[in-house]
Image 1 (cartoon, rainbow, N blue to C red):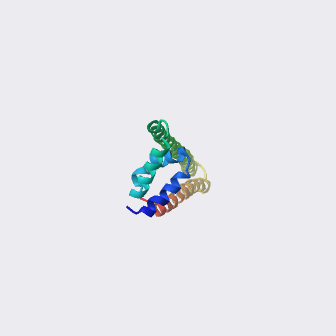
Image 2 (image 1 turned 90 degrees about the vertical axis):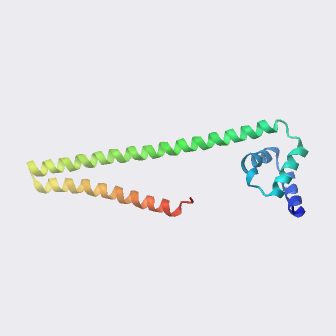
Image 3 (image 1 turned 90 degrees about the horizontal axis):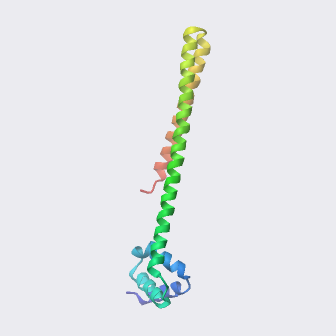
Length: 142
């Protein structure tokens, strides 16, 4: 174990608040170097933080709840986007159907314009969605 690293981490942890030490322990303890773990455990032991186990558990529970909340929020946004897209597709389907009926029953030119408007709208939506997915996939950190 590198004593210089341990000493540096001791000084770093000594300057932190109890809440910060608890947060580090609760969220990053398993990813710390041996020197950092040793210094963290020593700082916690020296300070004799009251209800340490309960605070760590509460911090982990709180972070889990925050993560679940954000996940639900994203799911709601995705659902709202899907619903909006469905409404636009329904509108486009109505345009296409109205265009076909108009083309068959009355004036072919006006009907074809309605069909074209519906198809172009669908095309624009799908191309925009594909470009968005491309950029998401391009910058994903999996």
